[in-house]
Length: 46
Image: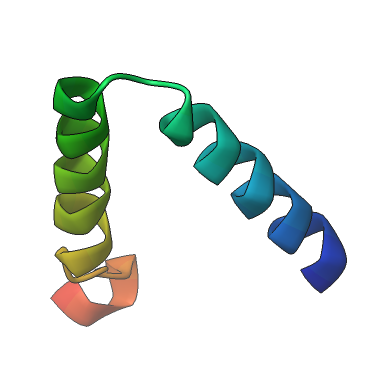
């Protein structure tokens, strides 16, 4: 499972490297926002 995740990450990095600099910044900013966002489970609202 971890090897699959690493392969997917490598594929994503390769795809990002193929983009132009503006698109790279946009993708990285989006990923930063989505990773930095705290994940709330449905139980935490109880």
